[in-house]
Figure 1 (tube, each protein chain N blue to C red):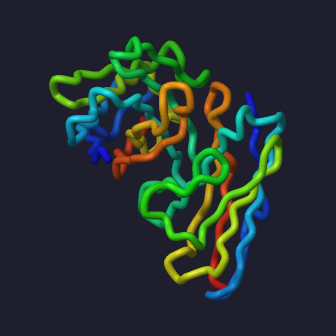
Figure 2: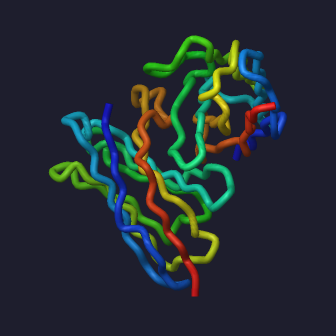
Figure 3: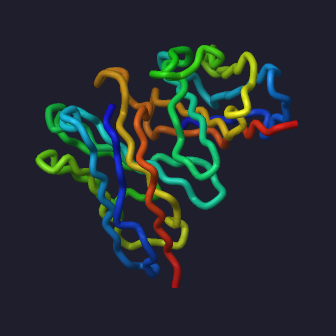
Length: 108
Length: 124
């Protein structure tokens, strides 16, 4: 089973700042099959990025994903008020599909 | 994009059973590979299991903690996905989300549509 470790656990930012979230895998993720999700309080998760760098439908271009192998990054170029939430990475290159433990982006 | 709504959650005693349903809208439901993902209170996300489309064989795959206790099935004539949960344990307490998997059969495995979730509480 691939273990995903996200850092930091909490990121405190002001609106307009840049957010950089990290996801490290315990072994190489096949074909960069890595996704990112956003979960706001009381809501279901929402797909942001798949294939490490492809934005999902209707996702603003301030969200971008990068990386390969074992190291992946989600960047929010300028954090908007609605972006304060928990973010999860997930690998789907092997079964079982596994998620990271999440990074909370909170208002500073 | 398929819209999903779960139902059937509730309170059940340890060792008991419960069956969740998930109704999807749209004609593309029959082509969708579907998964259940759960989230224990205050915790992260955990994949539970997956069923392929009938056209891809309709086979299932499960996470180790639920294998042999949970069963996923589908009725495409009703656009409905099911999760039969038996021998429930306290640690199965969670919100259960129904999801569709995006991509092609060769690249699938990420979850592009989610229902609002259904809470299952296992407690005596």
